[in-house]
Image: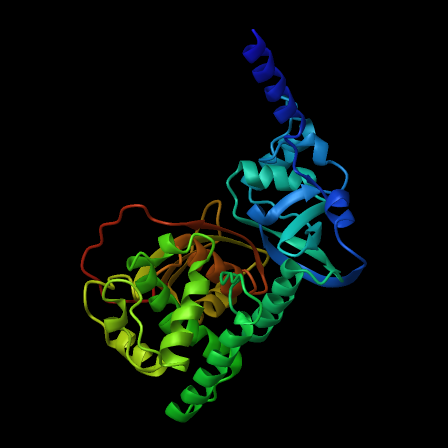
Amino acid sequence: MEKFLKKLFNIKADRAVDNVKSFHDAKAKEDDCKIVERGILRIDLNKIVGSVGKYKDFDSRFHFKTKEQSPRFKSIKQAMLDQKSFPPIKLYQIRDEFYILDGNHRVAAAKSLGRQDIDANVTELISSKKNLENLLYMEKYAFLKTTGLPDKIELTEVGKYRYLEKQIKKHLNYLKTDSEEDVDIKRAAQDWYDTIYIPLTAIIQRGGLLKYFPKRSISDLYAYVSFTHWSRKAKRKYGIGLYKQLPGSMESFRKQMLEKSNPEYPEMKRTITAFVFINTKVAKESKLVEKIFKVEGVTEVHAVHGNIDILIKISLTRDLLASDAEVIGQFVEQKIRTIPGIESTQTIIPGLSKVKDQFECVELV
């Protein structure tokens, strides 16, 4: 009986604290904060962890605690299913976590529908507290702002983001020498990420090194291996046979990866296909069709009759570790939805496809 009562009260206690995080509790842990308006951003829903005023209304998965859904929540969810547009929600940001100031129902509805991200007007609070967590965050923020890279590189030591930035600047100088084209830091960073960082982290993962460093990230190991092998040029063995796969310089490694045809790297330049349904705000779609057709990666554009106005087919390539959904979503958000005249989009990713021999491309009027 004693064990049963303890278990019962523990369950009740767990339920009592099963909320999303409180913004005020999180802010209270910081010293004086500088407020920075970040503007309208596309935010990963998984990073929205709490609320300013309604954190007790939701469990930790952002489900309403009441069993019966409110009419407002139902109407918002249905509107999302109908591809209707909404104004950006309002969020506070503390490092990598976001808290809802306005838009709790929209976030809950989007999460329940399995959406990946949402538009938000973001106000960031930057703490003056000089602890490791804040120092790392500020260093990462500066790195991402300079390079324009996706927020996927997680380091646990201060100074390592600056080391990676130096590596990218060195790669920039190489590209300027090797190519007649004008190359800026962001373009060099993306090339470094695609042809050096991603392949080397994939090799590190195959070597099984992470299990020996449980408190470190794959980015930490990349920084360690690349610094030791290419900067210090120390002769070390990083796992079984890994050192044999690494040439003596970063650019030699890049060249080797670009030329690699070994099945060990089957997804180095994997092609992915998707279809996008588009609804427009314009009466005539012909000019919009021409604009969309000029976008690199769009292979087919069709003005159609029915519930949608335009159907397009896109063909993209992705690197070793990125997901199909991530690459396609980023493309649609940055290349398609930014075209004036487009009201809404819906992306379809094929699960299984069969394609006959390509026919000659003709324009049908």
